[in-house]
Amino acid sequence: MLNTARPLTNTDTYFHLRFGHEFLHGWSLRHPGSVSSFATADWVPTQWLSEIVMAKTEDRFGLSGVAWLSGLLEVLLFLGVYAAARVRAEPLVAMPVTAISLFAMQSGLSMRPQVISYLMTALVVAAWLRTLDDHRVRWWLVPLVWLWAMLHGMWPIALMVGALATVGLALDRTHRPVVLRSAAVTAACAAAAAVTPVGPALYGAVLAVGSRRAYFSEWLPPDWISWPSAGFAVLLAATLAGLWRRRENPWTETLLIVLAGVFAAYSERTVPVGAAMLAPLAAGPLQALFGRRTPLRSREVRAVVAAAVLALVALAVAVPRTADDPLAVPRWADPALGTLPTGTKVLDDWSLGGYLMWRYPRLDLMMHGYGDTFTTAELDRNTGLLLLSPGWQRDLRASGARVALLRPMSRLAYELTGQEGWSVVHRSESLMMLRAPADWRSPAPAVAQLGGSVG
Image 1: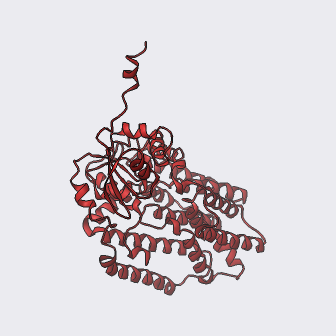
Image 2: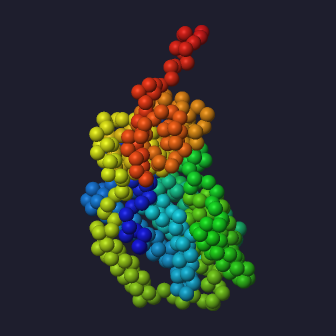
Image 3: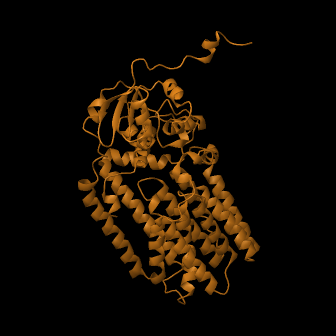
């Protein structure tokens, strides 16, 4: 909670706010626009409902309200993970499992819609484990996935978990009608995702993510010596120890534990997904080391809920004083950028783009972190500029950008000022504004150079 009582430092938060405002002011869900002429992909929104809620919260309560919303999501995540573990284990087991799971998720805990996916993942896994225990399918998973598909793009996790759980139930020799109903629930969940306001195109948006993962560090393989990965490894080791001590282990549990490991190994972004899955999966085997689970009593429920409400009240009191200000910019930034003509094309730092598009919506920024809106060619262009790949000068000249907002120590800023003749208009420790020389022109088209077209 202390983390959410601070200013919103994740720059991705701000592009979600900007997109939410665009949806509130005319963007179509099936054919949204773009906030930049440099991002021209035909894209489909996968988290539009979350973004609209964020934007409405900002309109009503300012950034402090958005910070409180972030705290609310994290409290709900705690309650959901704890409940998923508590159903299978007593508090002595469920609480440390929850704590380690949340620790392993810390790289993804910020005011971004992905936190909702962590919560949904824990609930979906817990639901299928309950089906394993009592052979009753949970049809409420269908509306849950329908809602999830409007909140964040990781909703296919529910389909993977459901399909794997169905296979596990069959291998565990569960009654055939239960297996068939389980398959029907998973199929219904898949159909539900196709009937959101976005429509069946949502499936194409999910598949498109894979073509862009190489451009974003959070989609690269995780660093296994990082604290979040270490937390997941500890929880996985404890789970495997519990499985080893238990005489019989259902296939359903085993397959889902494997899937959690696959998610954790796939990318840094999905380590929290693996941790959310593992919390309810670890609780059962670990509880077997302690004997029978103590039943859940109303006194415990009241205590946990009261603590959560108290935390949210304290956060509501704190955030107007601690989290209402946006990220600081140099004193020269607002007057200098505010006087640029609307639509000015600006070469900006990729990591700053989300914040800059929110703070200076009149500018036409070249880069930001909402990768869905860029084609792969445009992402190649952006990457090439930052890495100074061969041809980067040609791409920059062709872009029409004659103003740059970059970090002072970046390679691109050094090359522009040192070799390309760009002048420093303003400079501070965190940001510098550059302007192209008067003779900086776009390259002549190749056709004109050849004197005409061929054929």
